[in-house]
Picture 1 (tube, helix red, strand yellow):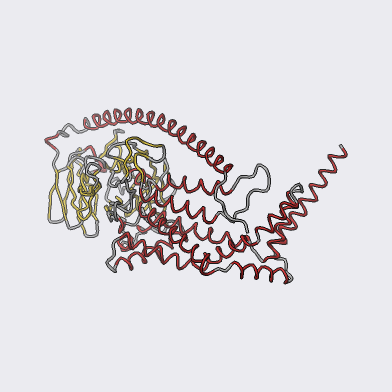
Picture 2 (tube, one colour):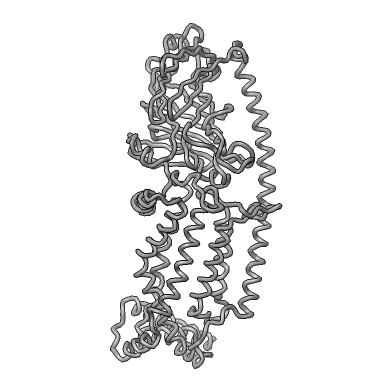
Length: 598
């Protein structure tokens, strides 16, 4: 029997060349990205100047808008602290009392968590008066009046009265009613344009990860349908939106319109550095009756906690990006309940993930056993395959392939069975990729040197940035990469080498995969890296147990010989493959004959 001698000299050279090409591409795209970032930075500066001009012009609409004229009012309960500004009569500050934000200076989650603060949110209703002049409520000065858990903001404009009535309710809810009187004498519009500008605050450790999870989310069709939009532009001209929200990694700000938003559109752009991650702008129309604006709205400033989101019965649970279809079902119906059950035993989050990994491995163990048995069978028949390849060294590649398949058929080896474990792993991997950075119960939970299992660990900090890696190395990601490499070396011994010139050496590609995986895991949730470290370490133990305890190569060899004696019925797949090969051979012969004639 042939031993697995690992990577030979030619494989090492191929590996080195591919790595050089890979890093060459990385540096090229990094330089390209830095140039694009410079252009974006310049555009942002221009935009800031434009916004400053707009604000100056807006303040000229109402001469009473002076710093001394702006008042504030506050409401609080155990979940929210909300502050209102008399300029625009809008929400100017929202703090979630039960949560903390990450502090990049101290590397700890110990800052008060504000969804709205420092004017990062600005909204109002816009319409035209009968002279064509644009009026926006966010430019008006309101007078606040607090009564219990309610604040009434009142503004006067040319004898018209505009009132915003806010009532703070439990479950992260702020009721918002708009009432006008005398507006019909000023405008003849039958709808008002609701405009909301929102800059997402950086609340978590992993900036890139949080930025990628920040986007528009909305429901329509009477709350039955849900959609999200992470693109630069969003447009829902035909649908009536029941609510529109700005989703972040673990929190969301949502405004619900009882009569809905129509002709909705928006845009968003990433902010590369600083306190904010993304700038989003939304615009949608709300109906006016008799040129009066009397509509009911509700603000929600919520954590993305699945049980809480389900209690509203407004399709809010879809905001949590746990994956579509079967992937989402796995997270909602399997991984989340399993985590919660194990966590009730009093274990820390890291050990809960450890036990979750073992349970998943036990469930998949029958499939893994079949895979390793197939691997052992292929190892036993390897000498026969090598002998055929040697005999047919100069023969047609198609003929060689047919001879190889015949050996597999007689031995009772189904090569396609080896694909099943890989296919099963794909949805599990994607489900966990969604689970770890979005499960709020893991937020802020540390394990060993990782302070937050929903973000990367940066125990090894670098004095410089590496393209696609950043300025740190995640220990969990490194450990995961090492065990994947060991697992790859252990399982690649039975892999057939390419029989035709120009075909890629699959062993080399298998060794490169763990290295590229490091770039992905280094900035991902450390909980995901820890899960896959444990998973692959268990895979290694399983291989050793199966190889030295469970499987007996002598018995497998005897079984293969017995299989050869039995008449084998040709399966549908094998028959199809044989027919395709025969057809290809016939076509090849015809082409060769035509060449000879020419």
